[in-house]
Length: 304
Image 1: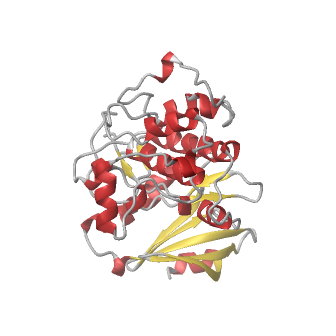
Image 2: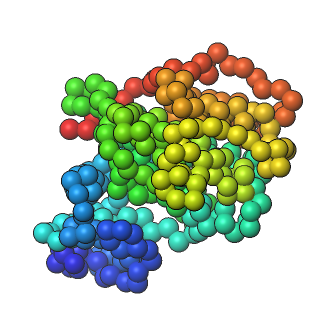
């Protein structure tokens, strides 16, 4: 553990663990305020991609989250030869994965699902405006504060998709979690920020399907094959009571053709979102502004 971190914070109990490190409670020695500290053991970073992600996590998290009301905020960073530490908001409420599991296979009502998708899409849209793609959107990384406000967490896989001149540049590398990763990532091609929209679509599908993902297999390899096929289905047994508006939005997010897939900003303008999941089941309002395009919106923050 870094000496500077130990001087500034009293380190408490472990509250989470991942492939490369651990998350613990901590308390500021100066103010007494409680936080979470994510500690990454650099010795466990297995390859160049893992090391690159760890090296830029703090910088990209700060860029993507500062002033972003639906993202976990980063308060301090510490680093030595062995460890990298990020001091973050402490969020004790169950995450979205826990909330879905607690329903025992029952789907979320559409208004409740829309109340999650809307701030999640806003969190991602704000990241994209700053030129950052999260690349690991999933229920485990959707947290909530004490007031129930959504907070997107874990920028360990984040990457920039703009250069110092503000020009769009493709991303590379297979990162993310099999159920939620986009087809273009699995295929090993270059890709853009819309991989995050695909992941939001998977999260939305799972909420409306009682935890069942749209693409899966018995192994990671089989799941990747299903993702690449991208054969989106709405089994009547599960989706019989789901509105056409919700299914329309899912088709636009889980669209294999990236040029036709929605951007995060377009998701926010869809009638299912703007109506709070209360769109009529027998009619979907058509809005010319929802025409599919490759990308849109200004990139306000550049990764330099």
